[in-house]
Amino acid sequence: MKIYTKTGDSGQTGLFGGPRVAKDDPRIEAYGTVDELNAALGAARAETQPVEIEACLQRVQNELFSIGSELATPRPAEKGMILLNDGHVAYLEQAIDSLEAQLPPLTQFVLPAGNRAATALHIARGVCRRAERRVVTLGQLPGVELSPRIVWYLNRLSDYLFVAARAANHLAGVPDVPWVKP
Image (cartoon, rainbow, N blue to C red; front, side):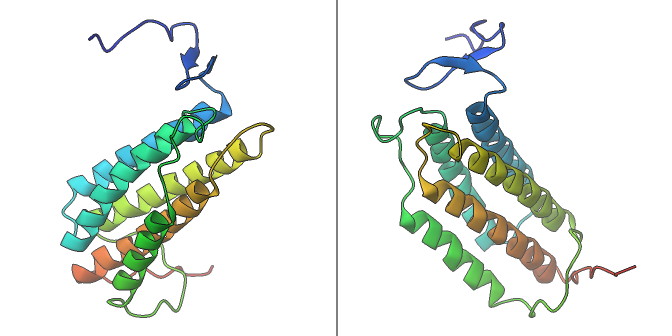
């Protein structure tokens, strides 16, 4: 099977079980940004992460593929493509709570900085927030079916990535970098 099909050369792409749309369609923007997030997590995993963070990131990368599949499907319920459930969101909440228990309390705003592992997680967090915005935009369009769990999941994931970045720094003995108000 060839990787190139040339069917997208006109600026259109096909949705799963649906029509062809422009490559800048809000649906393509949403799942394309989720794909970018997945790549950012791969880059974060290329840095040495604490074991519990690495395990969570690997699981999340698989779950992001599920989100991308749902977003690429115009009628996901009809096609059996609603793949996230409440347990996926709960897993992220538990992971956040577990990491936060190891951290000093957050008493001020901190900059996205620190060691390479933490900084990569902060970058992924920024991409996650953009993915969340793209999904919200898509969900507000008339006739778009979208599980609310996708937004819940991305919202929790961005929280997780923030806490994971702090934990990566903390476990490496690197303190948070406080924001200094001018």
